[in-house]
Image 1 (tube, rainbow, N blue to C red):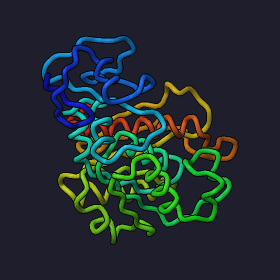
Image 2: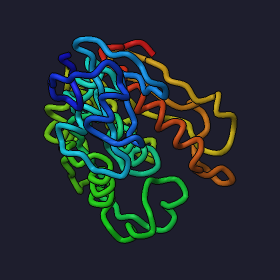
Image 3: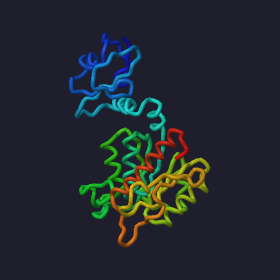
Length: 267
């Protein structure tokens, strides 16, 4: 019987998924059959796609690719892998957005920030004590390499200004705005929409404090602009930026990026 196993076409004399695992793996290996992880044995058919995942083992690129594809389904994974996404600002929003995009297998990421990791960042940003003093671009790139070393990651340790937006973001499909300051947010959104005709921008406003998670939403205020947050609660005295709401908003942004990469433009 001809089946595809971990991305390779093979001829096997097997009738069930567990028989395949017995031939090429171990009993503790996970099995994904046609995109679904199975717990009980199943019959297999000609041209089925199986992924056998060994625990505690780092696969080669082709094998990891087949595993990602098995989780995401082939058509979804192909579109995500072809995506080129820029993340401007690597604080509470941007660092978490970048990690989520790496986990779903976005093919190329641009990480932009001019700051270094300092202790107060640890309350909500995707950094550890070992990253203190490192540039955020370097620290985040190292984390992504630990998640998926086959993603192309470009870094720019620079401040984004009106004068360099065109050069920095040319060639990318989507820009994630993840700045702290309202004036910087506004500048990036306005310049990207003005200077590019095809790039979509996913921005954020209002994720401070500890109000209800359900207030955070995704909206589309105009063509090519998507806005995530509650649009009201900015950081101020008595209302700081805390991990839960910041990461919920980052999740909204990352999910909107995923939808756009899949060609889904409504919110």
